[in-house]
Image (tube, rainbow over all chains, first blue to last red; front, side):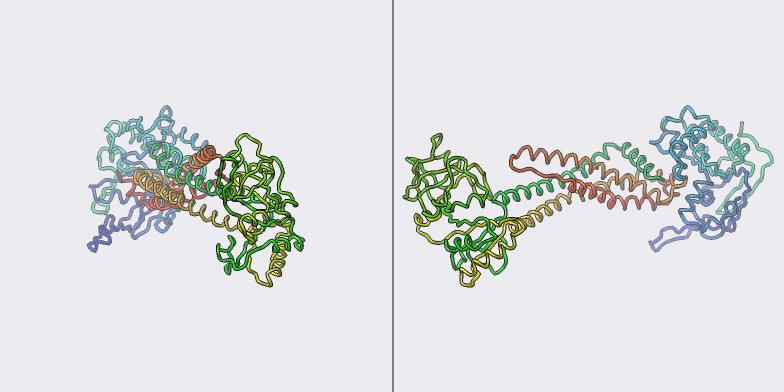
Length: 238
Length: 402
């Protein structure tokens, strides 16, 4: 489902100053992820984790190389088409939740549906269903500042899932949470992976969290240093 | 994202910063209110002055001595006349002017009017019996100058209301003898109140037969001739006819000027319109200032909501959607402000109308439409740049922004 082939991502730093410098974030990286996998990406900071996730999430384009998502070559698509891909196929979960502060939990969950032209009524209905799945139906009309960290992240997960995307991308999803809440979030990921067959790709630097995944990829200097398939999950998940 | 969705989103965004939004809208409202008020005053002035002109009488043709080379509709400059207009000219116009309903000679001067021990400086106007018909005057009490009075130059006069009050008080002046420039005149009528027309107080006049005026003031030339065309349709013909009659009288010289009331009115109209547009332009500056306020607040808003923009893009908003979102906000700000301005403008125009008696500002639907159209336009123009900035954000950087 995900095919990265010899992908490079080069940033130019200090553009226009005459002293610009090229920073290579990803170097000839090839990666294949099957549908239904649960992958953790680890690595030191600056190893290219976030860059990889941004490219996988169609927020960024490779400088060179090819990225095929469900057989569709993404690297050459226009901004507007990429937005559509993000809307339909990809769900994002962020470390800092990124909920809109003035919107209720329900409206936050429904947000992606606005951009696919779903009516207000249908949006609400679907958002309610999704909130129920993360057991937050009773919090539908609360605003983010009235929610705990764990609740916020669950709202964010509901938002990521509302379009039934095939891929869930998470960037340090437990980074702002205590370990118990973190475990809850990871177990939700696990459930989604197993029960709904969602492909989960999660960036984390926490080895305990990474251990929940069935495949752990370690990046170093923009290259894959280690790609381990774990047959059995160890610890972490209750 | 439908228009309705964008609208709701924009309203929500504004509600979150209600105070800031209302200040921004206030700027817009003041601009729109200023445009409406000034334009309505301009329109009111025009109507007021137009009315003053039409109060002079309809289908009026003004004939003045002297010829201007440049065609000034306001008549020749004073003092340039080579040959005067005379009673003969008036007679000729009456005799041959088939398109003219009435013709009257006019002489004009000032003098003192004395009744017993009271004295008043007044404008003395020499005319004849057709004067009232031409200038839409009527007699309130007594009678006006008769053809006989006019023909014989009898020493009789009609006085305005102001003159009556000042000289006679409560007494009935009809039949009384007054003194004008050492000659005695009998008061035969009192003119109905007319008010001020074009700066001339019609109630402070003394009207005497033109022949009597000529004798008393020892002059044989007229101030001018006033005529009235049969109707609006023959106005052009009547002008042409009067011109050819007078030209023949003056041995082929066109040493006089004919002005139609229409020409005067259209000239005044042009000038007044220009003044109105200048005022609207000045008020328009405040609209621009309001627009800059909107742009400023939107730039702040974009900066504050960078993360929101990043997130919206991550969940599928196209750049166009972001552009639309902020542009809608700008339009809502300016149009809401604009409607507030319309209300304020209408209110203040009404207030001005209530304060002044004679003069009424006129708010037309066109003026309101124009103001609303411009406020929307300002919202669009000044919203484009902030909205474009928001749409150009890189979602990755935007999401990382604290």
